Image (cartoon, rainbow, N blue to C red; front, top):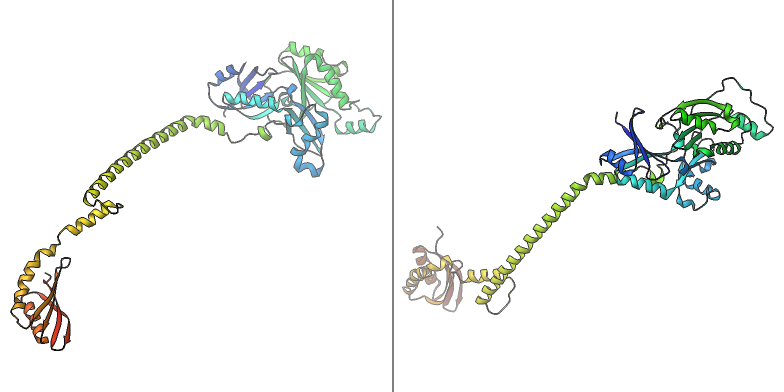
Length: 431
């Protein structure tokens, strides 16, 4: 089972104690300032439980109605306004477990607690649970060595108090000059040792206990401290001490019902900050790589754009050397069109051959007169408009041309009086 880090802070904000727990047993412990705690962790991020001084946390019990149960977190803090000095918004209020119309509260200075959380966060310690130190004292049921018959009370309030809790047990622990007192599952406080006698008397008065005084369980780290604590117990409670224990400061009830201060804005959230610290190096490397990639890509784009501009300028200069005036858009396309128009077609080489083969045939027929000759370089076709006194003369010319290996088509004949006009399309055969 993995060890759990537990950190305890005294009234001095730079006075810490810490230990490692495994299966409820203390594996190791130490004390010192914040830097000492950082050094002991080896700069490794840790999750921890935090104990804060009881003098910094006030606990009390309030009543609520069943209709208010769903809205306790919003309603209960404002019930404290009349009994709290200062602005209620400056307090962090944690709520215990509601039961039978009553609920315990624990509140402390919000900025003070936030400062502690920040200090620990800065050294890589994430607080997942937080308690007031007195509320972790182990409660234990106590019974008198000899049965004591409850005395009859003179008031109804005393009768009700005896019926509900005839034998209460309070646990007191002396620790570093402070006495931690837990008098209920979710209520407790701390006072300096010289004030514990007065604090017990005031608590008895506040709880309206007239008979059946609570039993006391005393705890301390050594016998000298235990004897010192015993001397400060009020005389009328001296015979109510049911047990005395020598206990280490870390022998606490971490699994009890103490109010966890990690609520509202102090509640445990996704450890984004811890994740960010873990991945910070990778993120910085990724960012540097991305910036370098974008920089190189941008440089290449700039270089290519510059080369493209130079090419365009060269093309424009060449285009203007060929066509000084006119449109300059799409010079490459326009030069290609002009170059294509200037290049001879493959069929143009055969025009003289066609004329040499066709014209003698026409001249041998005295009845045929040539009116127009046209030649298409694109297709290699020749068109000849002729006139004759009879259609037979034109058709005979066509046949003679075809006999020479050409393809001759008669594409229309028009007769006007005794003259016939026709047009012959002559082309070389396709091989």
